[in-house]
Image (cartoon, rainbow, N blue to C red; front, top):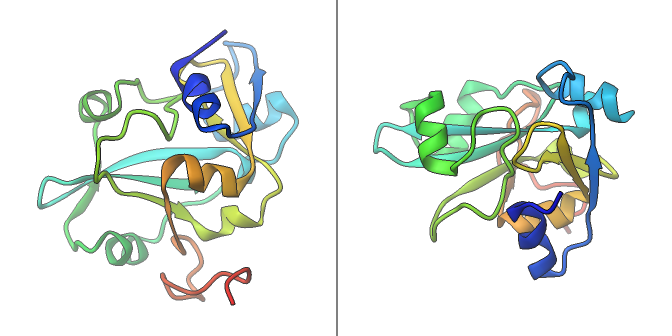
Length: 168
């Protein structure tokens, strides 16, 4: 299956693997991870948040993680944020919740945030836009494809803007 997300990555010259899993797989990152033989933390949740200023942002977390509200608010720069509903997600991304690719649909200036702990994984899985299709790529290639801002969104012991171990 050739999807817009695949063509986007190919256009950027970003290496990736296309994987398929049964369409009757249990919804969610854990189900996809089991079906493909990976850990839930390697499957990326693609979430859309709205701010009180009507900005929409993309937040990417490992499938086994939940964002810390205060960290999310600080990273986004708004005290008034909420998870977008299904209609808003479809309007913003063009996709239904469940297999949203984290790239190719953003307009100029759209902000995207990636949880720093994902940078420790060898490979990450992201939705390809159709349930049953997944894309595997390295964390750095995901950051490049999305233009993501890497911040700590899930570790209470670290600051939101803590430098990653790879930073000098």
